Figure 1 (cartoon, rainbow, N blue to C red):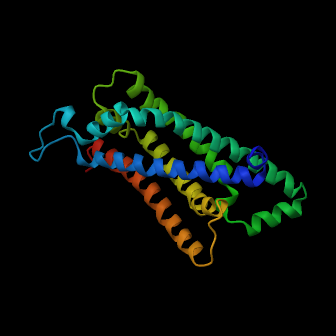
Figure 2 (figure 1 turned 90 degrees about the vertical axis):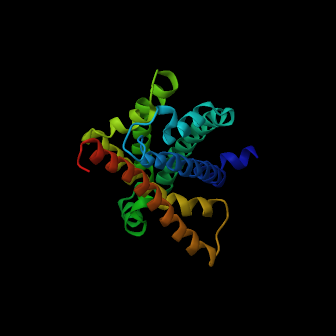
Figure 3 (figure 1 turned 180 degrees about the vertical axis):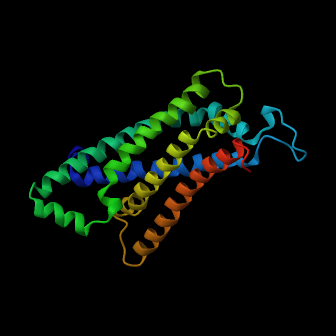
Length: 228
């Protein structure tokens, strides 16, 4: 087992497993964030008590559920391990290709753009994640945030933050567009009938994730600045 996990195939297998875990987390996270569209007012436009705001209820559940509290550390480990494996695999692939320019050009010409940029989009996502944790996780987890809904929506009033947020999920979409199908291949799920279906599902998945998160940011930017 030790030899397997230290081998290239083993690392790709673990990369795929941690990737699956992170993709499931993204679906759950987007589902919670979509409750922001429910707003914080009633049918007459009056502000609801913060305890009755659907997003606040979902956020409170995530912050107090014991299982989720344990899983957040598993998630953190999975993310770090995923990045670690990505760096190792990219480094070894570059060494395997050699330093000849012809080989590099062949790689660039024959490999899809989203595959060639996996390490770069991954690092950009990491930078955004650190910003995201600083703006949301740290204040909610360790601060004295009175209203999670307002914390999230107020940040989207900033055109700079909104632009960063949208760009981050475009990069995430590029990353997922290759990572989804690649993960299935890495665990041995490769079939002439099912592989095309997996690729279609992968495209649908990354579009849903990227557009879903970006739409939230754009909507609340316009709403927060009185443009809608």
